[in-house]
Image: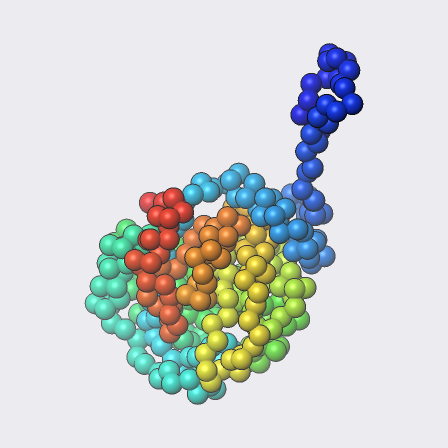
Amino acid sequence: MSLVQNPSACAAPSADAPQPITLVRPARAAEPAADARWSVEAIEALFALPFNDLLWKAQQVHREHFDANEVQLSTLLSIKTGGCPEDCGYCPQSVHHDTGVEAGKMLDIKAVLEAASCAKGQGATRFCMGAAWRAPKDRDIEKVAELVSGVKAMGLETCCTLGMLSESQAQTLKEAGLDYYNHNLDTAPEAYGRIISTRDYQDRLDTLENVRRAGMNVCCGGIVGMGESRRERAGLVAQLANLTPYPESVPINELVQVEGTPLAGTDKLDPLEFVRTIAVARITMPTARVRLSAGREQMSEAVQALCFLAGANSVFYGDKLLTTGNPQSERDRALLDKLGMKTSA
């Protein structure tokens, strides 16, 4: 497309006159129709776009659905730490790994509500509660339901991550006022066996289905930097984007390497590849909240800024994510101020 006027309306240019300027449109990757599924190949093509073109496309999609300068703040509290019987290779809470994390009892309601009040005072709008269970017992669900009701009464959105849920357990949490349930897919199906052996991929999908049937929103993402290939990262995004519907919240975690876990010592993911993952998640799941989650403490401000440009619009906010560190609230506020970003009400 030329930016000059119609040549027929102009005098003939001299030999040394400036030549017409032509806009070069960014490269396009194939994408499915609105009602079609994303193939792994189509998502790989997105990953392969020139970096600037990928971010340009992601930013366009982002601005169609969100205020590009707004970020949602969530706070995560471990209400029951350690002693998990699963053998997830990244997790310091597994009984299979010697990481120094000891099993603790579930926090009482007073401690949880105090933490929720503090989180609200610091600007968080969603309060997430996590427990290191493979699958909670019904008596555990009754206790968590009491916590959910208390946090909900404070005017916060509520979220839980408790492991695998039955349909009746999901219904109990819904009735208590739970807004979101988090259950990550972690990685692509073909890479899953390298990460965990104590459950199947289908177990995760079944829990997500139970959450949907109960009428709750789904928070579901994965972890990158676990030694997976780019095609496997594309496979993870395909799994998420092809859920019906895709998750309302999509946390993208970068592996936090903890000494004593099998994945400690894994080659670190290139930061720009992480940014690409954020952009691809935004393009394939346009209306989801794409959240910067674990691993943010080890990211520079510049990388975080690129992630926001790529379409991330939610962060976990506070000093700790379950058992791993997280940028302190003051640092987060300072960064958002530098970027001219505001937090959602």
